[in-house]
Amino acid sequence: MARQLDEQISGRFPVGQRLRVLDVGMGQGTQALRLARTGHQVTGVEREPTMIAAARAALAGEPVGIRERVRIIEGDGRDTGVHFLPGSFDVVLCHGVLMYVEEPDALLAGLARMLAPGGLLSLLVRNADALAMRPGLSGDWAGALDAFDTFSYRNRLGLEVRADRLATLTGALAGIGAPLQSWYGVRVFTDTAADDAGAPDDLAALLAAEERAGRTDPYRAVAALLHLCGVRG
Image (cartoon, rainbow, N blue to C red):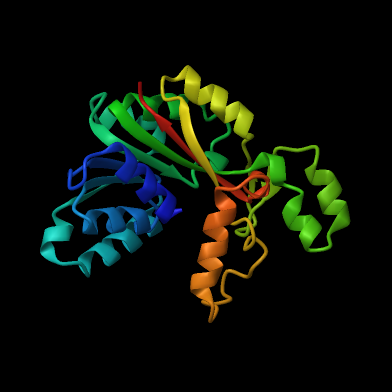
């Protein structure tokens, strides 16, 4: 996903431009730190204290120049209008958040308002069109059959959360003035891999296969996650 995001940024902004980035639901700060290391000014919004603590700990280990480029705000992603003026950011990230929001329309509209004209909105969501893939590939046939008729699933944390369809989000992005420009699949082949499996010896080949599948039909359509990129008009 990081490679996909870099592709979108490099294709839409001049080389060397220091971008204003908003990372909503920044978690432990993986993407925020990565973008700050490349010179961008990053603001992260996160509501979970444990995630904020992890992000601050990771940030503390960075050189001072990078630490100065990252700002962390404790808050809910639905309240971006409380903290920032419309059009304040060139790039807005919202990765792995929508599945925890029962009604995401207001959140999406708020994110779009944060974008400057031509700004990039990057969403990572659970793919509702492929919910049967994980149980099916694991041999859970009853679970696969149930998944065909639902928008919810139980994630690896044991939480019941929701998924989104590509067609629905395409319409939603058009409606908020940030129409879909590109989309990718994420975790096409690796969704059933154990989280603690460690890095395989052929990691480069694995990443190359995932990257190719994530931009190729029909593979990307059955990915566990979808990476959607909209652009503010």
